[in-house]
Amino acid sequence: MFEPVIAPSASLLGLLQRGRGDGQLHALAADRDQAIAAVESCVTNDPRADWQVENRSLYYARLYMELEAPLTGLELHLTSPEDATDTDEARTGLALAVLGHLAGYGRRDALDLLRAYTTTGTNWAWALDELALRDTDETLLALAPAVLNRFPSGPEGDAELREAIRAAYEPRVWRLWAVHHPRVATASEQSPFDLWQRQLNRQGVTPGWSTADVLAWADQGEGTEPGALARRAAAAARCLTAVVRPEDAPLLAEAAAGGPAGARCAAMRHLVEQRDPAAAEYIETAAADLDHRIVATALELLGRMRGPEALRHARRWADPATGSADSALGQAAVRLLADAGEACDAPLVVAALHQWISLNGVTGTALGSLVDGIGRLRAHAAVPALRHVYGEAASSELRGRAAQALAVTDPYFGEGPAVECLWDCEESTRELAATHVTTTGDARVLERLRRLAADPAEEAEVHAAVRGRLTARDR
Image (cartoon, rainbow, N blue to C red; front, side, top):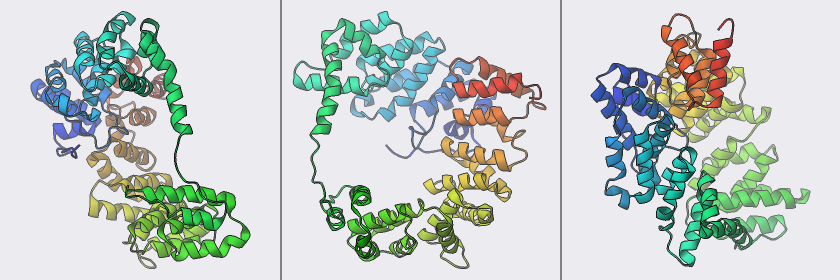
């Protein structure tokens, strides 16, 4: 899939793509046709960079209900000829999930569309999972012939059927069909044995039972697949835990200082896990290596280091006055301080957050660690930067982390961002808002809390937080 194109944060489309609470509020105040078009664009062109860690379906389904929007655009998207050629479930997954929520809200047209797509669509398994949570036994039984016809008779078709049953998110429908269709019953019984057979037949050469054997094994059969060496080195490091003897210390030190790539990564990983005092020196040297695999391993291991000695090295590497703060090692070091540092490390983390935003904007995996660190260290000086991350982040998961940090650093969070967060797409952000929001001064707050409490589609954690606020004497 291509990277989604995200509209400016101040526009209606940009707010909706980000899943911000203000997106819902602006959509309800905008021209209805314009709002429906914007929501439909989001659902048919999933704006999430990673749909597995960001929620949008309930957020958009609520907007469809509030706007009383028709499902014509979703139907055209699902029945498009592209459905037959683009088998990536991310193309239709969001639309199907939205339809599932709408069916749960009682929209019969959403239920009918899910049923039709289950019989004809490429991503039928997702649609079936949505129906399994909401449809009647009678209707699900009627869908069985169309679904089972997708699996031709014979060994290959039976294997595909077993895989479909094993991959199903919601097993209810398959259990129902197994009672009426012997083929499904047989496949359901055979599916666990397929998994055991694959586990028993796993191929591969195991290392010998000495430190030298394990280090040599770490460099065998690397392959060209990205990450192959790192995975093999990690497995070798686990083996080293069982075989290393005190007299092997020189061999490990030699490998960690400049051995072949696999052995070097395995040795460094083992020494870090054992909290060897020399591990930091090997990390510093490896971080400047020409082999990007060794560098990546060194920086990843730095993030795992803990203890006063590790923090002392991290402060030296992260401080512009004593280290190379602009280097990859310095950036990894400041992330370690964000994860495990002390109050005295807050200025370095705040400076790193400002520098990251200046150079990279509100993107990048490392940004989340810095935001979390700001909250953990309660660095109030970073509040303006956190507000910027909250408003501009395309990732709702990152925005939620920024909200968590603002809740403990921004004295105005309860009467400001927390109000908007009650409409956010992320359940954890709504739960945070329900816990911290100021219930006086904004008439929308109590009404929103009551609606969340009464919404059967809302998550249990949000219900608990909302009801706790509604029943509290001081609110």
